[in-house]
Length: 433
Ligand code: F6P
Image 1: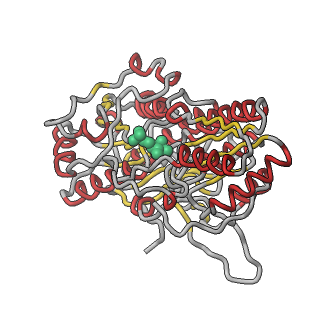
Image 2 (image 1 turned 180 degrees about the vertical axis):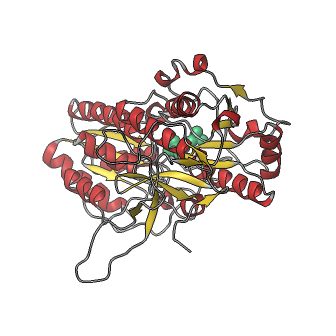
């Protein structure tokens, strides 16, 4: 079996209506051939055999599976909000309707709930008027929800609505739902394409270098860090402490730290930081510089806190508040030393994800959306549009949901944050999730 093989609904026997080329040098962009793939490993080691695994290159195919004029598509947005969702909805519609000629596109309301007619609201028809200004808005115009629904019920509904392709915009929980739908469709021998679009500010989806929403979240988070820095500098022994979202991965904290260049300590779930070591380093920093900025990611150091047992509807553990815990520990530590500090605690919470997408995320949302449409039109299914080695690729959803993407403590991003902060080096965390 080819690694990363993508499921298809059948032979693509129809000609694509897109006015693209198959020849180089004519100044017109080309259709993408099934034979062109993206190397999984982009390093070549001259002292050992090369890794030849590869991923399917995304893009418009010359031959497609569906006849666009007779096609009905649906879009669903699930999970937490993220800048760019509306941009993806809009670009999916435009690519389907204006470029392929699809007549009917339905917006499923409130996530997978809307695929369960007994509990959800009926779908909304997406039209040119409906999408006109949605790319300027945060949130999702279709509504969202967390939690799985019965795949049988959802596929019954898709069949009753004569849906040929479903676009699932969301993170890992959403993609697990998409996989369950694709499996049920396959079990019934139906021809419904299920294609995922990677959405999350946490940037923790495997095979996706950058999910849409992450860049905007970084921008907002860096603004908060700037404020923390100003506050810290404005007080005697001022400590700006910022808690950021990011659940089990420190990408937001690390990225925002690099974007701001004003952080002295960045604490992420991937490291096993020692509280005493951290407090000693903070003390040293305050003696030397009279102010400090700390960024902590929400899933960090949970073993230090009373274990929260609650879960959200997606099955994610709800974390105890590491930000407030650190604030208390810092105050108690310095009080015991009769050293007066001024802690300013900032928790921007949902503010970094409920805003409209910035330019970088608008562009990425558009590209991911259009690649999702090309894939579905070609009859690809049970797959997510990934971003790998700077190319858009098709990734089988089972590969996406079978692992978690976390910060590589030996990688370039974490190395840069270490250099930017100069903080002590802590070992990898033993407990994840
Ligand atoms: O996964 C995205 C995210 O924003 C996480 O960073 C955060 O932990 C979670 O969603 C919060 O989600 P909600 O409160 O909407 O369930």
